[in-house]
Image (cartoon, rainbow, N blue to C red):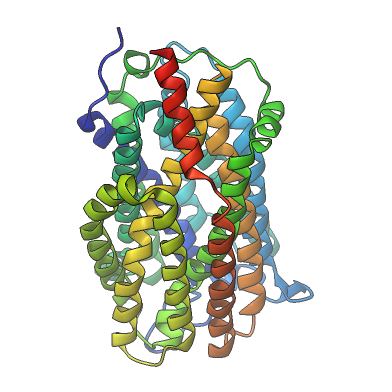
Length: 452
């Protein structure tokens, strides 16, 4: 008999999400800000590392930095199914997922630090190569941790209640990690007297990486995977498993909207620091306060989302979240100067953040569970990897689009990215209407009743 999965165990599991989301947030939210752009009197650290790498467009309007970020996400997406297949087929004593998480947590934290430290030689060409190489390694290590981790969402979510609960918990720890990452300028400011302007940023990244590493190691050593999960290794090879996953009609319908949503969201997240500093003319130290406000309100809404999902259905709430985010992006594109605009965006964004932070993972877990019941083969890792493979392609495109559209670094160029995000998010909402949640849950209930 396997040990019973409890909410306490799910909370411990969710701590790992805080760790990797903090590392991801540091890179996603601040690399573009510190490696591109121009400083001003209000925000002197903007583009502080920009002189070390190539800034001029190298192909049409595509910048080196934009291409590096895009290639990194594509590389990340390609490695997802490879790691997922490896994890699904693994026969390690410690389980199919935990050994990966345990082995990569420390290297993942170290390479995050290196991204802000190493590409600072006196040779720009060398810096370009170092930045590209380190970013590829960063994304590889993130995949090695996150892909097995995400597979555990379905495997620890052994019931519909547990799937919604674990999705809620990891959503909470994810946005806490992301929110803490926005505190980077604040922390750097406190350390500036000790380490100087550039050194304080690097020291702040190091402190955050150490916290993240500890968080990733907690579930890796606390959870004894085989005590709770009795999953047989899959015999299907990685890309055969990936193709099999995309043949699932309902999964494809989910992914269509997910790709477009992440394209829109990545445009917005990449530009957030610029929207606040260049359009609203807010000091970058306010970024954490605004993000914390958004996070706090979002967390207050979590219990409502958790309770409403089984009653109204995840599909209705997710579509509502898409439309709400579209409104947020539109407001941003029209915003004026002043801190009040930052708070308007933060408050409005809290609603879709709560919905879309929780429920999409539960949808993937539902589809993976139905597949397991119908085929007898547990390929949870590949379902989550296929999702990330798809949405990372959207993210890669968004990074190219953002850096290309904002090469002039004008207010109008930043506004235009928010307009594009608005339009694409509306398209994503329409596409998600094709997803048939009612059929999936009904079929899961039928198959489980038949087994009983």
